[in-house]
Amino acid sequence: MNSENSLTNLAMMLASGDVKVVDCTGVLGPDTPILRLPEDFAKNTPKVEIHKISEYDEDGPFFAWNWLKLGEHAGTHFDAPHHWITGKDYDDGFTDTLDVQRLVAPVNVIDCSEETAKNEDFLLTADSVKAWESEYGEIGAGEWVVMRTDWDKRATDEARFLNADDSGPHSPGPTPDCIEYLLSKGIVGWGTQCIGTDAGQAGGMEPPYPAHNLLHRDNCFGLASLANLDQLPAKGAILIAAPLKIQHGTGSPIRALALVPKD
Ligand code: 23J
Ligand code: MN
Image 1 (cartoon, rainbow, N blue to C red):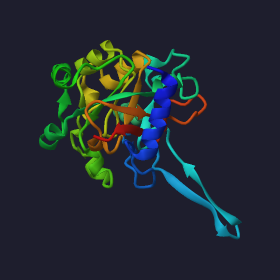
Image 2: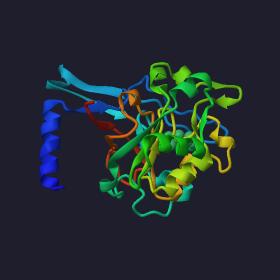
Image 3: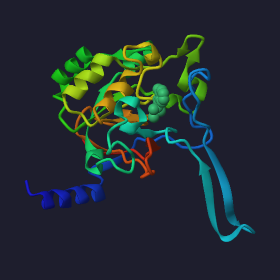
Image 4: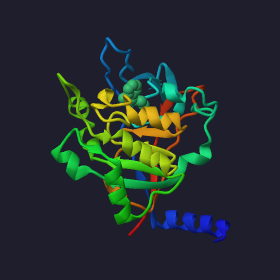
């Protein structure tokens, strides 16, 4: 196919609405849920703060603007390989050095919303991914894979989003063998709708936090707190997940956008 014509077609389909742009991003602000690790284990990211500089007033007569206090791993965000110790040696593993060509790719949406409605600790396995592939088609090299749980519906309530009790946080995620299988297919990255790419109970897995450990070991990317995956088809959409070019950043809030063909 002629790629120039294809891009012209894409532009026409965007203009006509035959391709919709779905916003897979949650609102970033003081109420955005933030990960809370045990204080005796690690320091934490602060809550997001938005501070007004001026709003057409004595501090700036014609203009409104704010400054932010913002963790790299706040809200809908990107995990770069350098985020995890297993990815520490990749020169292109930072937000300012990664290959942006990889960020725009087809997205496979694995719908686990029924399972996670019944079991908040639901784990997606390699076998379940293989069953999904036999129904919807193979996951290809360079593609995104995201786990739909509809967890974004909880994002207005941090306690429900984090869902922690005395035994720690309870939220769905992948098993180690799931991530190993996806990496064997050559994916660019793995995304979830929960606070991180790993399940709430992933600290007790082998290895601990397998999505982080294995994805970043292989110079692959993570996406967390994705929204509106219920508006995406299982296959056929393209996901654009672009982090800010933070100097030697380990991650960044993103505006995750999906291009979705109208059915
Ligand atoms: C550090 C340690 C554990 C986790 C995380 C970060 C994240 O979820 C993150 O935002 O990368 S689980
Ligand atoms: Mn993160």
